[in-house]
Length: 328
Ligand code: ASN
Ligand code: ZN
Ligand code: CA
View 1 (cartoon, rainbow, N blue to C red):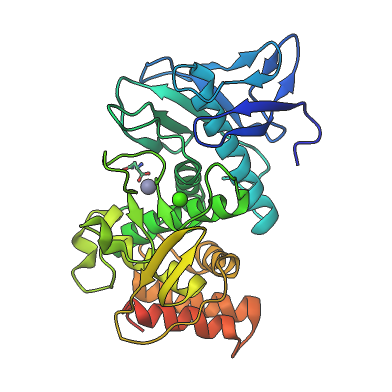
View 2: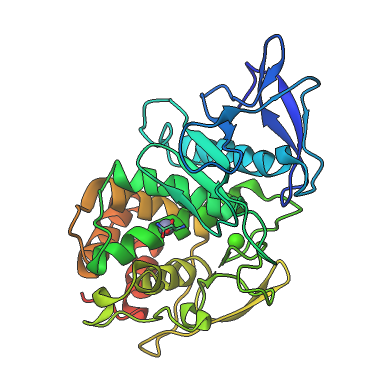
């Protein structure tokens, strides 16, 4: 889908060797056909950064010590996320107007986070054992904050805050499945390559969110008082259950065991259908103050719109909402 520009070759930290959307001029620029472009903040915390350029259109060498390597991952992440939304969900980028976004890498010193600020994506280099935060599911996560802001506009507190964060985890994971990159095989884990905890564990688990020690598996009336990264747990759990079903399962070598909150058995319909249903819910039925009850009503409506009344898809997403104890 980058056919109108030079296809560069990138060697990223996590993605291995990939094709990159770049632009040819007197030198090559790390900018794709949609206008997604990637800049080097060179440890600053302000400014737009300097757009990466290269003489031979071969970028990075996979090592963190090469400044282009992290940029390869971030740029591939932005391009792949754009393509996922465009081809799978019919959304032309964050603003649905065909324009890409800027990604800034090498933010600050020892910065162990990444963020969307309403305009652009920004990535720190990590610290100690934690690698740069440019992994594909993180890029998809941050870009999806932009999509949420420009659709439902979910608040970042209460139930809505959890729905907001989970939306980013769902579509970050969706992008990982869409890319199917052999160097970062798809899973239902978040940030599994970065080693943020220093012991090789991922940041979050969608099959059983409580495995991180803080996220909730099930909705309750006190959920909305938590940090959105923990109140996201039930909807992440819903996405896993509706996609793969309840119980134990090994996928791409990763073992999952997803319990239900109501002792029910849920049969999955595959992640892509769940993503289409959640995207329609987000973009059609939710508003800034929506709670988990609104999410449940919304997914039922969206599934009916997309797959019909009484469809297996409608049953699955409703059953999965019951299985996270979402209010009916
Ligand atoms: N990486 C975090 C996130 O996107 C940054 C934050 O807490 N806003 O959720
Ligand atoms: Zn987030
Ligand atoms: Ca992942």
